[in-house]
Amino acid sequence: MIVYSGSIRDFSNDVLLGLIADRIEECFRRNGFNHNNEAEVRSYNNSLMFMNNVLCNNSGIDENIKIAIEYTIPLTSKRVDFLITGYDKNNKENVVIIELKQWEKCLATSRDDVVITYVGNANRAVTHPSYQAYSYAKAIESFNESVRNKDISLHPCAFCHNFKDKYVDQIKNKKYEEAIKLAPLFLQKDQLKLREFIKQYVHKPDNGEILYTIENGKIKPSIALQDAISSLLKGNQVFTMIDEQQVAFATIKKLVEMTIDSDKKHTVIVEGGPGTGKSVIAINLLSNIILSGKVALYISKNSAPRYVYTKELINNNYRKKYVENLFKGSGCFVNSNSNTFDCLIVDEAHRLNEKSGFYGNDGENQIKEIINASKISVFFIDENQRVTLKDIGSIDLIKKYAKELNSEIHYGEDLKLVSQFRCGGSDGYLAFLDNLLGIRETANIDLSDITYDFRVYDDPNKMRDDLRKLNAINNKSRMIAGYCYKWVSRKDPSLDDINLENDFHAKWNFSSTNTWAIDEDSFEQVGCIHTSQGLEFDYCGVIIGKDLIYKDNKVMTNYSARATTDQSLKGIKSYLDPYKEADIIIRNTYRTLLSRGQKGCFVYCEDKELSNYIKSIIITK
Picture 1: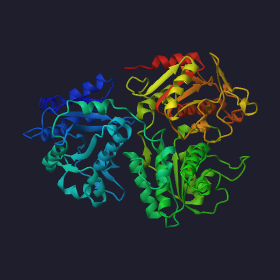
Picture 2: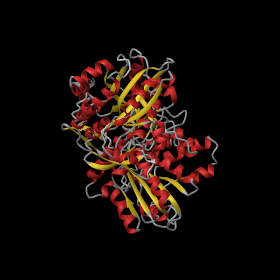
Picture 3: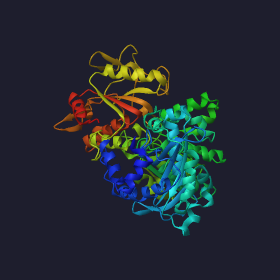
Picture 4: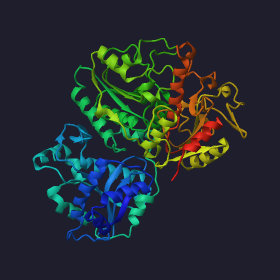
């Protein structure tokens, strides 16, 4: 979405008349967004005045050339500050992407593409402006298929118009040479150079055609992690990490480089919600370490991602034994000696169990065993994705065992992932889910300002039919459900597990495969939390059973509606407050299921009151 757009002439008039900030705020409101960001309003009045100086004042740039302000990159929550579009002298379509910064200074770091500067009322680690501009350009190329097909060239740069000369050696440190080469950096004294950079690529107006392609082009989700696993392990840059993703990755990478050859233990905790890139960072880190000649393993309690990654790698000519030794379950370290491994990378750390083994009686604690077995242990965690009573992974428990084993703890702002890249890139959608499910109160109580395909169905057959059509495109749509249905087909394949209204019948996912999420013939089966957590789809259809209902004007849980074959709540009656424990598990389960789709989520509720309630709070533009 583009918030503000027009010709350079229109833009200049709005700046000169002091109206530009008001115009942008008006555009936000027109698009259904309640912006109310005073810091950004101040930045508009400041930064855009400098951009007006660059583009006007006898610049030689055609005033009919189109510009855009605040473009939201598809399938992300990230916005590009300034776009300029047009033809060069050879009639090639180009877009100049400008990242605007009001920084007066920053400090260089030893981390790749990371600087320290004062933002958000504190000194923080953030990506270098040139890297940020470059990563945004790569994201547009990745997500906008029309930009690629029309061969529209993107030319990123950064403009730090307030930067003080005494700190130039920091922002232009040799560490950032590659980023600055990819996206040139311009300071206040470089305004004429920025003008020439723009004129090099944008010489003639295009009547808004390029902006139309940017705004309305065919959107294609980023390649799923499971599809890119082979290339990633070869060291190829499949995903360009953005903002806090890059900060977290660079922070861990530097720590590993500095400490992996010592016997001093380190424990890293990376916190992030669904779709924030935890698994992408984990696999990139795994690749980086093993390519450096050190021993690193990917650990996951949930077997579904491990089996899917393994199958994809074997299909790409990796030796089965090598892959199986690379991806391990969380219960493999009961008898490991201290510091056996250079680095253990734990994905979905909230799913870790206390005991290991088939009967759940081996070892002391999986968190403690992993920290003990490795010099560097890295835990990727989202405490709101704890979905069984056996899941004991928590930040406090990781800290407890790290201290007990004399492992230095690394946890803080540099290791928190906020922006997410699933669910249409909508942070608002996840906030909506949290509010709907009663996990936390948020400002997003509806979907009025969210561009994400969210539908509520009265007929489960219609939901399945719509998903089937989408799945026929690329086999990346699936149905998933809460645990309210006995798995009777496991013993008698002639029976259906899920029987709903309008003669809807379906079976749980195949018991004969561990890779339901990518199998060619698995669409008609319904997945569960264990076969979908840690993975993603283009579209998912979620069947909400009677364990989540709407009653007495609120969303409630009913753990007695869970299937007796469900192991997630096994032993619940032994708890002092079984309802409280089950309530957390059920809400977390649906939050996880409802956040698996990159492009859309379709919902069918067995409880009609819940269905009607969700429909009542969905407000579309």
